[in-house]
Structures are given as structure tokens and as C-alpha cells.
Length: 469
Image (cartoon, rainbow, N blue to C red; front, side, top):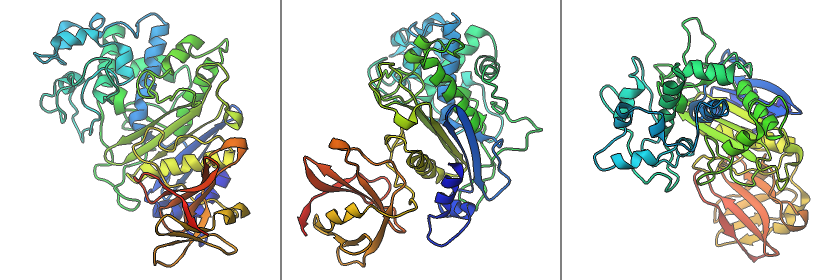
């Protein structure tokens, strides 16, 4: 399947080119990817440099679910209670880092569960990192010099609503270090990395480590410095590989099934992955009844990544996983354009593996136009030929073409994305305009044909209705 995926990437621009060249045209110098299927993890890389499956990438905000796993392992061992107030674990001096005169009385109502699910009300969504000499987290939480972010403090009521907070996850880091009296890297090494044999995962690059991907501004321009340092390790500081992140997914899938040698006991795994606020569970995005646990990541100056696994979290068999049962995908890149590429590749993997459709955004802010698939478009597209909306026209012919207003027609190609399923198991026909970031979904609404058209990244879909044939 990974070879098929590589060939699909290579075919994005019509003429035969290498997968690496196709990737650079998409704006990314290197992509490391891994697929979990049939209890086996397969890895591959597409790169213009010496990147391999052991090359370290910054996991960015995927650090957060790994931190959550460490918390639940510590909770299972009796060190913590996720429903206890943070005042049980932090000293008055540590709590003062987060205080303002007006909000001091509210801190006692924040729990670890709120911190992990981004519902604590604490500020600071993300961190930019440091070029050198990063300050300790006590300084960062207070927003004191030389911290490059403001104080982490309450902006909303604890438990009121979802508010993404890397600041809150950094408080989790302080709690773990305080309770277990060890450094955060040592804690995660003991609770997560060693039990899962994650030998290529760490929070600081050793001087002897040379196999890591350097950040790029574009596919061709390396960034200087090659990476930023993140002392906010629980929120953003993990270095790892896609294959090792899928070790975590596989362990959680086993835990949810209640295996005797589970990494987490079933009840703890379910609790961690049950939504608390706005589709977010503790450290993970896990929309109820979706069958998906996931998280994306974005670190300055150029790392972007995505981790996704399929699982029946509730255990009530209401989620139809089909061929996706026990599966997962992880993609890591080293340029800002990777934010789109990681989702395009994940979509394509799901398409090739015949997984059910998953939410395109996966916790990101935008919907992403899929890659082009190989093969021919279903002949059923002809039933959608005609005029749609004010300016759109699908022309009749041997192959589908799209015309917008007075512009010349553009060929429509099959999209590498899982189709939407309608009533009576009818599937959508998904198409991409050749050379453009425009997707059409030929579908149905209330028994009538419609077209959902997404005219570019960061655009909401428009629903088109037929005006005449």
C-alpha cells in the first residue's frame, strides 16, 4: 500500500516525475509516513534529502496526547486523580504563577481533566519556541523575561467551554514533575517510551544525534536556525517518528479491547478517549461515535504532522469501523505547507485502504482539497452533466470537464478521498479540478442530485443545484 501511495503522490502533476519531485511541488522537502494495519506498522519516506524512517521530526502538538497517556499511566498507578483540583498537587508558590488578583479564587476549581481537555479556561494557545537558552517553565508560566509568551492565566471559567491551551498542558507538565519528583523526559521515558519500545523518541536532541529533519521555509529553502527548542515539552517538545507514534495508537487500540497485557486498563483508556468538551477528550480529539482518535501538530519554524487511529472507544459496537478496525496513519513533514500535505496524504491512505470517510479537518482549522487518484471516473458522473448554480457547467463528453462562467473548461479527475455514503449505500463521486485546488462532490440531498463544490483551501463548501440540463 505504501508503494501505491508513493505512486499516487508521483502522479499529481500529469507527466511522470519522482515522488520526491512531486512532494516539492506541493511545498514540502520531506514526508515521513507510517501505516498501521493488521497489527503491523509499515513505514516509508518521500524526500529530496537523506531522510529515512528513523529520522526524527518534531511532533509538535502531538506531544499533548503523549503527555495525556503519561498522565493516565500515572493515574492508573495511583499517583494522580484526573478529577482532583490542581491545588492538591501544586504548592501555593506554583499556583501563584497562574494567579491574577481577580481570578485567584477560581484556580482551586481547575482539574487535571480540564487541563488535558482544554476546558480549564487557561490562556496561551501555542508557543513559538526558542532559538537557544530556553527559560524554565516556571518563568514561562509567569510570562517573565526571557519568556516569549505572556503569563498563563485564567481567561474563562474552569469547565465552561473548550479553549485550546498549550499553557494548560504546560501546567500538566509541572504537576507531573512535582508529584513524581522527576524530570518530564524521565517520566515519559518510564511510563510511555520504555513500555512501548519507543527507542527513537525524546525531548532533547543529543549532540551525537544527526538523523533529524531540519525545518524549511519552503520545499527548497532551509530555515536558519534548523529548529526551535520547546521547554514546554508536554505541549510541543517531542521528537519522534511516525512509526513510533503508531506504537501508541496500537497500544491504545489493544487497551480499549481489554487485552490482559494492556498498556492501559480498559476503563482508563476509555476515560481518556471520551469527549469532554467540543469533541476533545483528554489530550486527544475523539469525536463521539466517530471511531477516530487523532491530533495534528504545528511548530515554528516549519514542522507539521498528523496522527490518526481508528477505535471503538465506547465499546458499544455502534461505530462501524469496517476495514479501518485496528488501523492508523501518521504523517510528519518539515515545512509550513506540510499542514495541507499531511491531510492530503492521510486522505489518500484512507482512500487506498478503503477506510470509512473521516472528518477532513481532523482538528485542523481548514478543509483540505484531496490529492488526485489514479484510474477513471465512474460513468455515473454523466448524470450530473448540465448547468449548476449561476456560473457552473459540467460538460457532456467522454470525460468530465468543468466550466466556470466564460473561462475555458478544466478536466475533472478522481479525488483520493473516501466517498460519502448516502441512503441505500449510494456513494458520492468525488472529483478534483486538474491543476487547481477545487473539489466537487457529486452527491444527494433529499433524493435530489446536488454538487458540493469547495473552491480552494480555507473555503466552505457551496451547495449547487441544477438549473437546467
